[in-house]
Length: 146
Image (tube, rainbow, N blue to C red):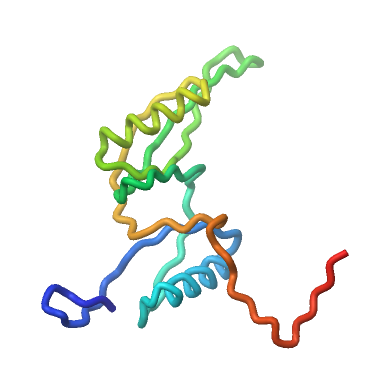
């Protein structure tokens, strides 16, 4: 629930992206994040696995674009070129900016590639796993580390 322009509470669906190994971990993290942000009440209606290989965030940009990158490699055993696709999520100001940022990134990697598509994604926020500190309770739990 979010307040609209008139101050009334309205139901709003937002999409978030976060790293997780399981659906349970994804739900647990999302609940902790939303509660910490004070976003109540809320309901998690869907958790979907995605095929992103990397997320590239730029602090000055708040729009997200899913970029399809086609890699070209040579299959030495068959003597033919082989193409594989990967998807990246990049924050940028517009499609051109997203293209330039991925191009710069890929030029640093120094592999053959083509960018066949860039699609705007309506994502509210991205939460990488390295920025997450789990909320744990120490009541009745003892852990020893050697």
